[in-house]
Image 1: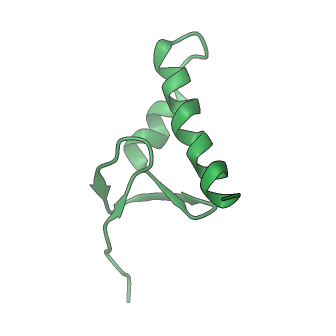
Image 2: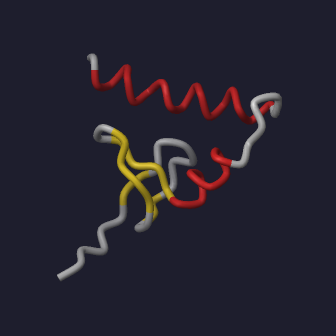
Amino acid sequence: MEEHTEHTCIICEQKKREGIFIVSEFICDACEAEMVHTDAQDAKYNYFIHQMKQIWVQKNA
């Protein structure tokens, strides 16, 4: 039986059902797709990096 639990995305901070887990943090499908297609020169790239750093900070806390 498939579980349809909502999780809070570490990037957009919205509750979503579909996405991936990295370590113990959830990234929704929409944010994952946007991150993959964001150029490193784009201003939003730094935002994604900042949000992703939270995974490692929380893991090592």
